[in-house]
Length: 452
Image (cartoon, rainbow, N blue to C red; front, side):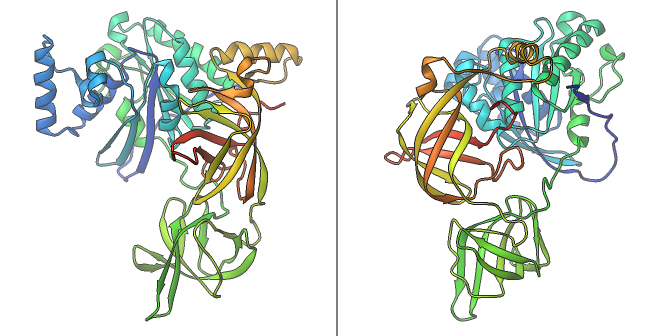
């Protein structure tokens, strides 16, 4: 498979909407510094925040402000100089709004990267120009591919430490292109930057005059975002709104995917009741259409028994209810997930009881590119696959950060669709019924074709 370089961005004056992105990469590649530089240079940092960073930096004997402190919010992060938790930052430019998740680099916090990238439309993966692709860089790229993040941006950082060497940048770019292609990444862009100095982050750099691509900010402001992944509307009901005085009955929630319009024939699942959308309220005002991501209230032409956890979908394109679930999961909890465990499965707004029937394999993502090459060689050069370690002792149990293949049986039907078709309706959580703690994040089906 050939990875596609993103086309050059075209700047215009229109606001491009909201972009959700996540940063990842190996330890000390400069993720937090890059995010801090981006926030500082776009004037998204309050004066008192920056003064606090300057004081801390002086106390450490630094000559200039350590911008990484703008994102490392936990005391243990500041003391160790690493990122542990997912740090969310919200900022905006005249052209676009951003929700940024700065995720950890250490292998023991891979699960946090899964959390941060699960809703991202772009993954920004950093590489130290001196070191090239590290194991954790590969791991985070594999996780991004598994989560089907639509686009990947490779930021080759610390270019100042290699003398802004053009050949070194293109060498790393070529290595990543081959690696990303083996994992099924379809769109990526490579950028040379120096987060510490600010080269090519917000402003172009004279030292990178040989690079004819955009700055990091230009790319983020102009990269296209696919706002509607599918035409078929999916509306999980979150709350029923009733007003006895006006005989008002509306069903509130957020459109998970696609869109719904007034007049559309719909079906309520899992009951199978049918009706027509008589009205749509958005922020208290009548509207003719509700699209993915919008909080809405639907009014139906008929009085039906609809409650939280039900799903409203087009009558001619409704999902099929299932009770036996085969999924790829990432285990998030320190408590292991074992065969036979009874859990709660939360899918959109519906929560049902479930049992873990089988944990058949664990994914080895330490070097997926080597696994893919081996798979191609064994299949006559045809298939790219991850390496499923079916003989590993952990196939009957998953521990924190493990990614595995599981089979679940739910107590009642759920409307889970393949994750490869829809990230919103194809994902779920497994929850400890005793403590309420989140145990595992799941993706229905076989997102990357690894279940052959």
